[in-house]
Structure formats: structure tokens, C-alpha cells
Length: 374
Image 1 (tube, rainbow, N blue to C red):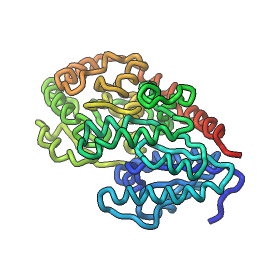
Image 2 (image 1 turned 180 degrees about the horizontal axis):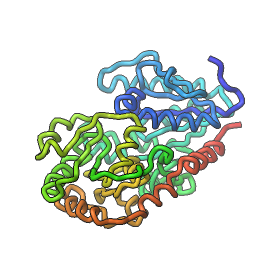
Image 3 (image 1 turned 60 degrees about the vertical axis):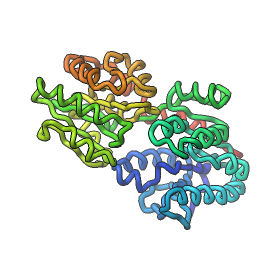
Image 4 (image 1 turned 30 degrees about the vertical axis):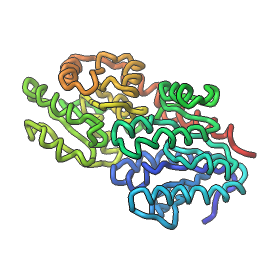
């Protein structure tokens, strides 16, 4: 394979929680492919993931998929093999000049060793308080080691890209990272795809994982009550997860609630574009909730639980009246009623102004170029 020698090398490392096969299963590969293509405009990209097979045919031009030749589906073993692969790869990176390492996520504990071997500059994204999320969602041994793993990852950063200011504060206060070594860079929204349709329908929608921590059961419970006096409305739940069967048992009117499996990004955008109301009922926290800002760009009236991540987005978009108390289905019902009469356009305007992909990628590109070894 012939590599483009005219561009700097971007060594892009994906966390163990985001293999390509998972993006394909969830229908979000188009989104990731767009992201990779943006990097490839200015860099030749080596894309490292924990997948156990080569996904090169899926890669956009200028992106080269890297994966371990030996892998395992046994719990935990695959992660260890991926870590060993990154450590061995670091010896090769050491020989390459005009390059920088970009890490997505903060749950790879071997990053200090990888950085020491490669002698490269590491730009790491802090998108979600993974350590706290693991403690609340899973517990067990994983929870016991999560903070140490995240600490190792964050302290490996020469520069930290935080998707929200509250994550930047955690990096500074909990992990003692100097403020000048961090910046806030939010997730982008592809506004060419996510936009309002010409006519909104009487539709309430949720998009995302079907996991208990996402609070979709609260949404169904609230909708059951809402539907009794608003018969023209339907609820669409778009996503996959092991909580699907449990959620179906909570539905009162099966003709009014539709469960849709994973869809390609453009079809998700179509559903959002024609929906009047979007709800993100997370129980604990979000990083920078991409589904929420995609819904805002699609012209939905967006309701969200009052948790870190959601809270900041709704406050900054001047729509706090659509925040509901986390885990409180009665308050969510009240906010559904508030949304009916809301004429709020501030959410849409906020998304278009702040999450334009061109602005977000230009900012990131400038940051990465500052850390290129020459």
C-alpha cells in the first residue's frame, strides 16, 4: 500500500469501547466515516482499533486501518491484546517524523508506556467521565480500576481536548492538568444532514443506546400518561441494546410506540427532521450529548434530564425550561406538556452557530499541527 508522503502522519487511536464493528451494528458508521474523511484532508491517517479483522475496504481515501493480527473474543483478553499491539506499534512510530498521536477516549491504561516508547506528542479527547460512568453503570472490578485507568490516560496527554467545560474542570481539579494544556472542543453536527424537514409531525423521538442508564423506561412511562390526553402523538424509540425487551413491557398502547432498530445516519436524520419533540432522559450523565445537539439542529424541541452534559447544553441554548429532574417521570411528563406550547428557536440557532463541522475540525487541525514533530 502506497502512503501519501506529502502530508503529516496522524496516528489515530480508538478506545476499546468503540470498535468499527460496533459502529456498523449501531448504524453510526457513516458518522465515523465522515469524521475520518475530514482528518484525511490534512493528514495521512493510521487508524488503530481493537477490531479483530481488517476493515480497510470501508476506509475513506487516505485512511489506513490498523488492527492486531492476533485477537480474542474472551472477556478482557481482547483488550489486553490490543494494548500489547499499541505498545509494539509505538516502536514503529518512534521512527516516523512529521507525526502526532491523537487518542479518542480516556480508558486505555497503557498510554503512558506507549507515549514513552514512541516519544510522540499525544493529543487526547476527554469526551465523557468514563471512570464515574463505569462506577454508576457497572460496578465490580471494572469500577475499582476505572479511575486509575482514566488517570493514566489523561496524564499522558500533552494536550487535552474536552468536549465540555465541566469535563475540563474535572481534568484540572481531579487530575491536576494545567488549564493551558486543555481546551474545550465540542462534538460537531453534520448540518448538511441534520436539519428540519419542511413539515413537523406529531412525533416524540429518542435516539441512542437501549441501556438502563439512558432512562428510556422513564420516557415510556411519561408518554403513557401524555398519550391519554394527546392521542395524535406517537413515540419513536430508535436504537438497539439489551434493554429492548424490558422496555416493550412498559408500553400501554402498542399502536402508539414504535421501536426502530439501528439505521444509517441519514435515516436517523430523516426521523429527527420530521419529529416535533426529542427527549434524552439519561439517569446519570452525558459527555457532550451528540444525539441532543443533532436533534437541536433538526429543529426538534429538545427535552433532557438535568444531569451533567445535558444541563450545560440546555442552559447554553437558553432552554432551561425543558430540563426535567433526573429519574423523575412525573417531571418529564410536565416538560412534555410545556414543549407542546413552546416556540423556542434558540436551540436550533445554538446548534447551527456552535457545532458547525467546519469550525470544529479547523480548530482541531490547528491544535494537532501545533504538536507535529518536525
